[in-house]
Every structure is written in structure tokens, then in C-alpha cells.
Length: 103
Image (cartoon, rainbow, N blue to C red; front, side, top):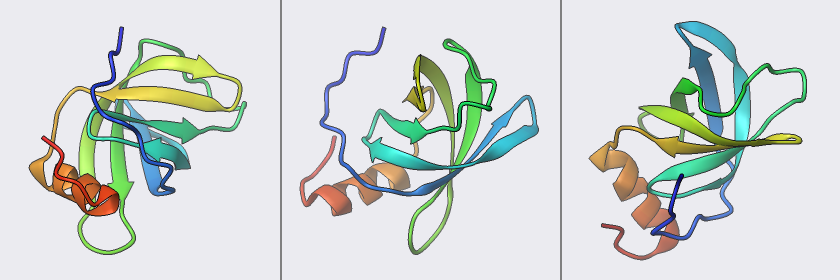
């Protein structure tokens, strides 16, 4: 079970989602944080809770971030994802968006 230690920010970013190397689509974030994100998802996408997905996050400018995530919540039109790996540059991006240093 995810326990959030940081607030998620209501920021919209593009995210490519893959499962076992197969692209499932490109979606938008509802909110993001250093430990996870929520994705706005079409009901047609067959993603279930407790799956591991590969995510490529596209910030407005700069590099993309490749992270793995575990689906901890799947609701109507949204998936809550907790990261399984961390990228220090992604953490820096979150810090810049929030205006606060994120550990």
C-alpha cells in the first residue's frame, strides 16, 4: 500500500505507457509527485491494479524521464501509480514545479 510522504501537484504532463514492451498509449497526468502520479485514463485501456508499467514522462522542456511504476489504484478514468525506481533529475523537476526542495 502506498503511503504518500509528499504532496502531489496538479500538473499536466504527457506520459507514454508500456506494459512488457507493448505501448498502451499516451496519457496525461492529473497530478504528480516525487513518489508517483495519477494518470487520466480512457476506460478502454486494460490496466489493472498491481501491474508494473514502464512510463516515459515528457516535461514541457528538456529530457524525458523513464520510470517504472506499480498501479496501486485503478478507478473510473484514473490510475494511481507509485514509482519503483527514482531519477534524481525527475526529483529536481518536481522541486522546480513546487518551488520547494524535495528530498
